[in-house]
Length: 266
Length: 252
Ligand SMILES: Nc1ncnc2c1ncn2[C@@H]1O[C@H](COP(=O)(O)OP(=O)(O)OP(=O)(O)O)[C@@H](O)[C@H]1O
Ligand SMILES: [Mg+2]
Image (cartoon, rainbow over all chains, first blue to last red; front, side, top):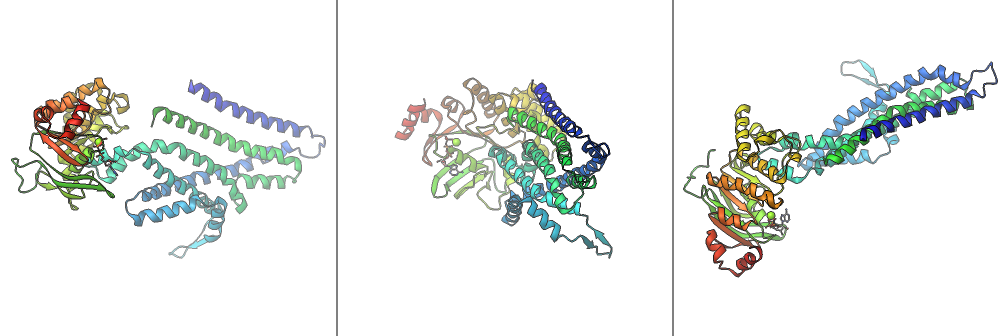
């Protein structure tokens, strides 16, 4: 039952998006009067590989940023629940700072604070490409949120679980590893996936910093094709569509997990 | 289990002396003295909020005492240098809310602590776990998850899980209070059997009939003090203190 609904759910918007794209293409095709000039559609088709190539960088940045954010966020989250204040308080500070700062400000800060080249102790210089810096910039706020997700999930486990593990002589580490965390992972998965989707949607911000990702390439393509106003709708629609086609299944899947966990009472 | 030096089985296995416990400014236990000999079954009864759970939890150090002494096999529990691992191997506890690990099967729940904490041989632990589950009549539920069991079944798994650590003392804190009346009996039967096998048991219970049948001594607590104690026949038939009489007239 749920399955059929979900499958329909997932088809409908994709069909809608495809129709949307077709309609805009048709609208543009009507202006095909001037035969010598390239139509917007033709221009889009010409530049599609270039835009998609940019989109690959969005994906690379989102996956890398998520990996960094997950590893550092989980460490930070564990530090947040440490019984030792020396470990807990700095972790809380870092978490709160990055959770409550605008992403763009973090991005600019990383851009300007991290040098574009570093000299290794061996004497070689390594260039740090802008997209790598942007990736770190995206990872930081997500890291802080992963840290909170972990902390929240651990807090949501009933105290009886700690007590019974404690009574069975488990150490704190054993309790976390064998009792608490396995129960947390299910609770953490949906919000974690949400943050991945959000992060991916934020990656075009890197265009502002000159990274050649999908948005930057779309704008460059329109310019190269002659900056005609009728390019705007099809080019941007295409850009939105590729993001949508990638993200929408993720958010459907997230919702399905949420529903399933809610139903199983986990 | 190696008891602490100087302790011999003819001394109390659990000895509580002038135990006080405060939460902030509220004194919940106001000087408790209890002695339990090896193999004895004692019941603690009393009105809600009188401190029964707090008392029983000080015995395995889950709730630290404020002042006074609690010893288990001669080892002081109220001690900053307490070897918690050693204590918790000796003392098992079962709670009102079973607290099974929901992500593990029944068999895994029972095996986990001996494997992880005692680092025992897997085959031996599995054998012991299976025989304990058979003892609590759950041999056919080994591969079930806790959520698939009734409350009474979960509580029996919790008892088996505790027993798999081979404790010398078992604590039970109102283990039937969350159960349907028809499943209360199956849990009580399990505890009775345990008592008959010679396990030292400290029980907090609202099941007066059961307390009377199973215990060697009953303690009636009110407002953080033991008001009266004695063999069940005496305490239930001829309660001396008016507070005991009032309580019993309400619950019997
Ligand atoms: N962790 C705690 N912090 C503060 N107060 C507590 C805590 N645990 C218990 N108390 C208080 O101590 C008193 C005794 O509680 P306790 O749970 O020991 O009573 P009880 O006799 O077990 O009651 P019941 O029959 O309802 O289980 C209560 O007033 C309770 O509010
Ligand atoms: Mg209680």
